[in-house]
Length: 469
Ligand SMILES: Cc1ncc(COP(=O)(O)O)c(C=O)c1O
Image (cartoon, rainbow, N blue to C red; front, side, top):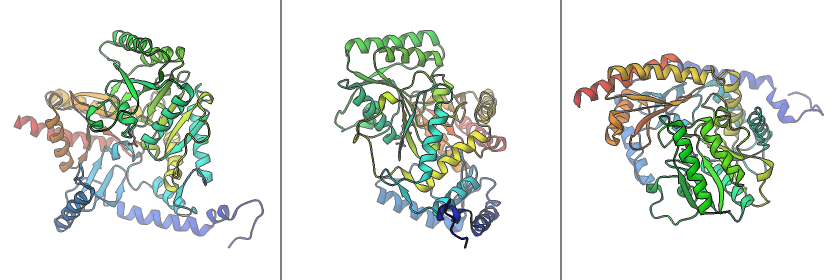
């Protein structure tokens, strides 16, 4: 054991103990030994199928409803590939709806997990945080402000919904007595009592009491940039006129995620934000799904809204969620707090994932995110040319890719997702009328060959369904 040194803590000395780096290497080597078998999709092992099905049935029963996919991970994967507890291997191009940005069992995540196991607690919270939490809020505010934003503050939380709730609370408190929100048609903001009102999906709030009043304005239309911008601005102005002094926040989801992968433009968002700012309305960007997936770490930077945003929320790929905000929106004591800010693993992994994406060239107009998107888009385009009925589009941006299957009929889209799943490819639906099939790639580990495999499976299923139609 090393001797005590007055300038370092025992924890620092422990982390630089050579036994730990040896143990870490041993663990990484052992993981790699088993990962080398997980390099392609494969069906379940017949010997494991019965027990797996029993597990799924019992899980569904306890949970009160079956799982969307018959998916229970074995606990090992290899980048975009994941082994399930029935021995099958899937190509994961949906990543828990955008969470597993480095895929499965990536060395960066395993290392973060070992470091976390060596920290003194499983969870961190507002009363007692670790130095990693400080590192994370510094990293997030520094990168958020690198092209002119003023998001000097950052509050961590455990879910996208909580980050969004916190942003709404700050906006209401600052702009009181304003008590309404304006949001885009078809936006998704989360499922709490308040956010179920912001989310433009009436089905998600059946039986719930009204909490906050939300007015909707239309989103951007790529086929009519000027007209749709004018229309949205006019709707916003009209709402401001109808409810003078009562609108606290303009809620902007910069790429409609659950809504079906529709993009806005810098001019569209800037025009709306300018009207909001002139009327003392908080401009909130919900980046829970877009964070880390566009040409910049933050999508508000991609859409050149640095001078416009007051509050920005992030989640999913960041493992820990957060609300970033300007000096003006600083909450009064007591407004926001909670027991957990996240597990030590999530916080350490958040730092590693964000630094990893930056250091590995994921951002920039020609960065890896945009390259991967272009490659996937070209593959889908080729399928679309051969089978236009089955695959239309593609749509999306960066690490968000989608196509419209079979005119966007819900049942067909679900069937295609299901058949691709059984053929080894994980995707999910988005939007309604048309319903699209979307992919949230594990950007940190996906390679062109994985996208080729995904396209091969999409084409095979598209062909089969086309022939049956
Ligand atoms: C844009 C957006 N906001 C908020 C949320 C809610 O995040 P969470 O499910 O972590 O509460 C989601 C989740 O899909 C989302 O896509």
